[in-house]
Structure formats: C-alpha cells, structure tokens
Image (cartoon, rainbow, N blue to C red; front, side, top):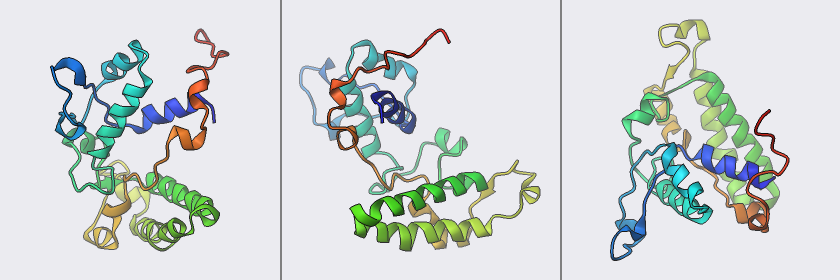
Length: 195
C-alpha cells in the first residue's frame, strides 16, 4: 500500500476532521481538555497540509475519533448533520449492509491466523448480526417512499445492530501497515495533476 493510499484512507475515513491549534494559548492543555468539534471542513485539512504537518493531522484525526460515536468504546450520539446524511444507526441501505458484511468477512479471514480471538468476535457476533438484519430488509420496490433507505426496526436493534453498524471495529496505524511510511514521498511522483 502506498503512502498516497494511506493518506487517502486517513482523510476519507475521518468523517469528522478538526482544526485545533493547541499553541494558540499560553499553555498547552491535555488532549481531553481541548475542544474538538464533531465536524470540520476542508479548510481544517488545508491548515495541516499548508504547514506540512502530517503529525498534527494525525493527532487531530486520532483525537476526534477517540471522541466519536464511531468509536465502539464511546457511548455518544453522532451530530444530527451526519445522521441526516446516513451516518448514524437510524437507517441504512441493502448495499451498505452488504458492503459492511463483506468487510467483516474479509477481516474474519485476515484475523484467523493473526488474531484468533478477534476472528471469533467477527465470526460469532458481527457477521451474524449483519446477516440477520440483511434478511429483514424488504425488496427495493417496497422501499420506494424512502428511496431505498431502510429504517432499522426494534428487532434489528435487539439483534445488536447499533453495536456494530457504522462503528470502527478494526483500526490500524500507518506504522503497522508500513513501518517506513515516513520515508516515502507524500504524493506519488508520477501523479498527473493535469490528467
């Protein structure tokens, strides 16, 4: 995996990115004392890139995720703006659940040899939940009013969908993927911006 792909994954997977300048005050508060807005915009990313501060961007994304409802260790509601765009645990689509199921199945295979305990979690909990909820989704023509969106039911919640849907069930670091990632160019030298 190239650094381009890692950076793209880092940015795309961070639905909520922030701008925090911890040095703007006379003292640097601990991370848990800083204000981390639940959402930010492209200018926040531009700040870090403009200062060639990949470490700062990583710090910001890590801290916002640590406080995010997508972190399975945090019981917190997503901001309404994200829920309205389908980011919560209120509704989904068949193709999104199929995609999540495919990811869970891939991780099951990945963990079988590397982390058997985590493989058991995906095999016994995550995958069965997705399969059962997928079976509850009616055919697309029955979802015309909602344009294909499926609102989770009480049964889906009792199956545990809120514990796994839109949650970061597996996170890794750039160091784990490529210990030498900092020695690579940030952008691919062959990238054709004019294409």
